[in-house]
Each structure stands twice: as structure tokens, then as C-alpha cells.
Image 1: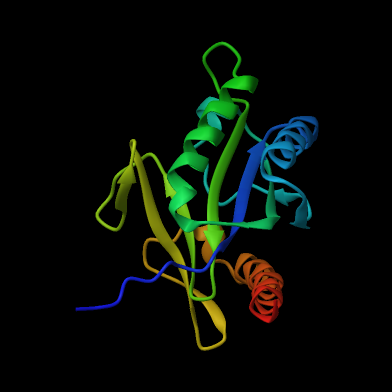
Image 2: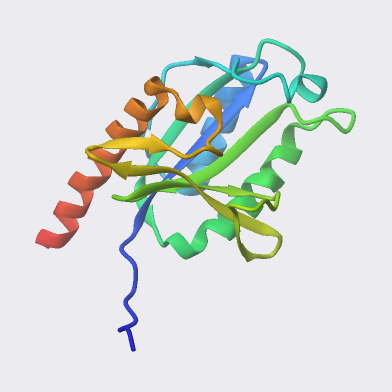
Length: 178
């Protein structure tokens, strides 16, 4: 029988996309108020790897990736996804979302994203929320799977997530030294 162990805390990340920088800034501020200080903020990124969201959001979407200083219990991901889904309603107009917020986490071995959609490669958590291992850390780099979204699979995104992983790794060293 294996020994049950409590997992190490993980690094919460969020991807935000919207059609206006003002909405990205507002969403970022609300997320920071809920989840605490941000210790990684990407540049403004074009959201141009898919047109899937254009009917709802319109063209010209922009994205930011955030990482939060405060580490979380990985078991909290379902609650966090439900929170971010509720936050999206804050900016809804005429039944259409104006802001999309996708939470996940980075640990030493992977990047995990939360989803409300089931698929063959997703694991049910609870309360209608699923989790997917989107990237794996192997050979000193994040590597995509065949199901990884094209933007997350890109070298630029993998490099960004590797930087966030380094921040997380330094945080773990600090926790272990206490």
C-alpha cells in the first residue's frame, strides 16, 4: 500500500483574454484582489491561434498570462475555476462574455488547466470542473501533448511557463528552508 502524502503547494496561473486592454486591466485587478499579488505578468499577447471565440467576443482578442505569488493547494482548482466563471459574468453584455478567464497551475512536473468541458484526456474533479495536463516538464523544458492548444504548445508560451516554473521553484526552496 502506498503512503498517502499531502501534495506540495502549486503556482496559480490565469490566462485572461478580451477585446479591450481596459477589460484585461479590470479583470487583472479583480483577480489580484481575490488571489493576491501577481509575481509574473506577461506582455500583451495576440490571441490569434484560433478563431473559435470570435462569434462570442469579436475579432482582435488580446491575452495576458498572470501568475500569483501565493501558492495554492492543487485541490482548490475546481473552486478557483468556479470563481473565475462567476467573475466572467461581471463583464457579460447581452448574454455574451467580454472577458475569458482560464485558471490553472504550474508545479515542477506539469502545467494543469481547469475546464468545464469533458474530453477523453480530462479528469473530472468535482462540481462540473475537469482538469487537463496541458504541458509536461521533460528534458528541462515544457513539452506539449497532442491535445495541447496551439498557443500553449508554441515555443514562446513554453518559454514563458518555464520562467513561471523558475519563480515557483525558488519559492519552494524558500519554503523548504524555513
